[in-house]
Image (cartoon, rainbow, N blue to C red; front, top):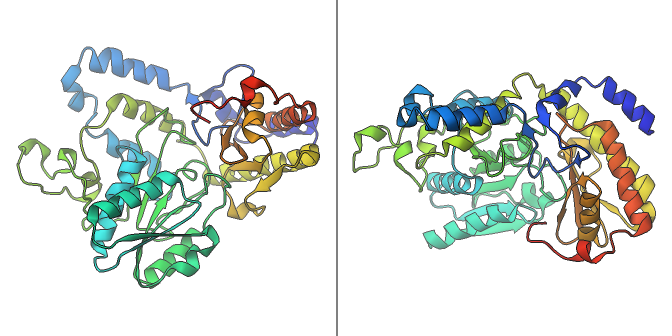
Length: 410
């Protein structure tokens, strides 16, 4: 596809009006929405009101007057629509790692007598760390078994208590078959926890259709909730009043303002909260979620596949002689909305790209990664990004001390 053809494609794009809803820095091609999404233009006004009126003037009355106390559930229901979850089966709370600890501990308690947590070697390391830490704390023989991503399905057996996998691999964009894994796990008596960090807001997810047990996810990537915005947790309605996390707090109590010294879990998703939630971040996220109110996930996914396919084709045509190799599958039914290439000197190449106004990121040991957020990324900037990458590789402009020196965040 030529640049002119990309321009025409942008003009007929059904999702093009969403781009105006985001603050896009001038001169920047932002392909890192899979790490931190752009800021929706509606967010500053909502946060300013929360600071200058709700906090500064209304103070503690805002828990009732401005609905702070119920906002985690309100935002959760907005996310539920994006991930195929039932009403009141998602709540926004805490961080993704804290939520994983909560649902993993609850799931293990529901499968006492089984000791294996099954995951894959490509899972995000923090998820593996949470499982390792919980196993050490329990100290009763639980173990984490991590197999190659393609071997997860075959590794599900009757000794597995919980299958804990990320639907879309953070490095390669490889996508697990959600329905197949859940079906096999349930047949073997195991529960499944899905990490939707690279799924929510990027691809269609059908948690209820797949009969999923638990899911967690972050909101600062494709959902655009802001840096460190609160995470979400899903529990299937059939498990909500059975699943009790090991980490509990007063916001999950059945009657928090009775201040009882004894724990009594609330019914439904409320029990998945711990302590007081961060309201300024919650308000920002809620405003960001309103941007999604009229978004069609099927149309979004179709554009995602087109953007990723275009970028792969352009990079392979333009940069083949430089040793770049696609990571992950070519089948777009089996991948998420980011594209990674194995690239010699990948870190320096990415730093040179960022300096040239094309923002992606690097994942060790050699992957340059580009996230495509269909609500705001265009075909023209996809073309320009591939051209810029080709120019940097052709001229070896990446080979400079400032690009070779590793920064704290890659």
